[in-house]
Length: 290
Image 1: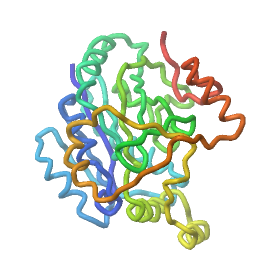
Image 2: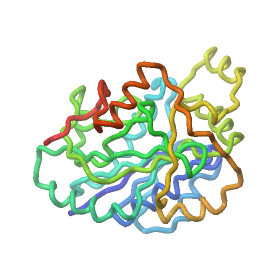
Image 3: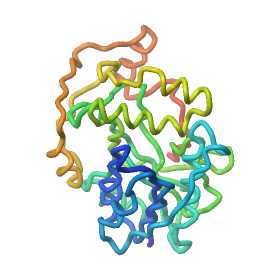
């Protein structure tokens, strides 16, 4: 069985993307790692080369944000990266630049890939999600955060990245997937307020054009981590590849998570989910095979 890894990245240093941690967290699981680097203004390529793994295969691309607007360029680039994977691979493992896999899930992932390799009904493997917020100590636990997404897909090029690259589809059809007892750790909101503000400015270019971009850049881009609806403390361990980054964290943040900030509707849905484990009226970009 062969598994290809693939990811896209642009301006990793400018935006403080933990792409090195993302890649190294899945390197033990893949036979090759496709890294498609966009037209960056920093030394993203050298950052990737410093990983020094023979599995890594670097390619280059120019992001067409004129044709692909409102974030769809992310899906276009993801499809380019997927197209570069070895056709001999049965599976392709997609990791975004601010995600990581804890090593405690490696055996579960390997077992699932082997178990469903010949079951052609299974087009993807579905992960649970943890979304860290502000620091490595807080996790979002409301409906605001997507709770599941597909990150391993069958190496079938009819499968395409969808919209802003959160999930995958075949045309408009949702993928048939199996649920894994494994998590993706999402660290996109773990930054100092200053770094988050700088990232927001750069990332706005993917989502806003012309006058709307100018208005966005003139608006208040400051980031207040106090604007959340519900958080909980994270009391477990982070992936080993994150230990250095955690030790080097140079900002301090304490949030009052004792209160929930919901509308009446969202408060009801929140507690129904906590009591039953069911997330009512939740949009899903996949279909789980039972």
